[in-house]
Image (tube, rainbow, N blue to C red; front, side, top):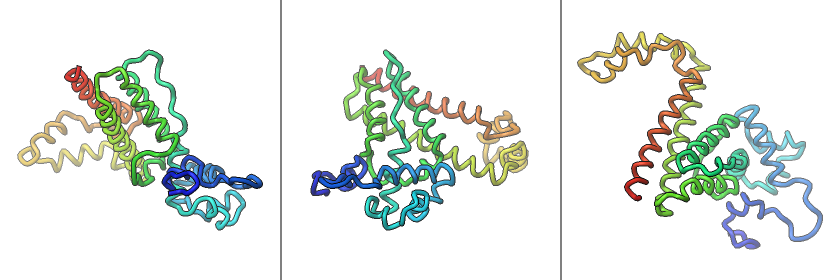
Length: 248
């Protein structure tokens, strides 16, 4: 608990309340400066390149100068995760809940594509930072006109986040795998499956293989990835729509 604010230390940090001096000269370095530099490092070099020493080097400061504002790498990662989320876009005016959540979901994916390292930051608790809470609020707002209870709205948004984060993480893993071994994503995959999938042992997968679902030159083509995400999102929202109808 931060004595000056009465807030948990992690919350005070994310809201910029922990290193605000009561009096005296404004500090020449702030946690916001450190966060921007760290996000720049992660965008350019990946999350593994982020360290207090490397960020200090980017700022032309000593590592100890950073520790006066950000006490650990875990704190730095929390600041980076919130800052990189940016401000959520406004939902389409007068839209229904489904249109709103669809736009919101694609907005989350767009942020992750601008900052691919985001899906690698460990999530150790519920959202408390200003930007993450703004995204949370925007999604809840899309459900404002539904008959769902407030608790149900939260559950819908958390379920949607679970789906989106899973899709984003998988896309990142596949992109890394493709970079290491593009051949694994070519027609060689379907050729291999036709040889090893025994319809007696794997009857339903065999039907998929024989239908030519995997007969593609590039299994991770961007347009296919977008189609997969849209399909999964539609199925999720179909379930929400059924629940909303029952509640109504």
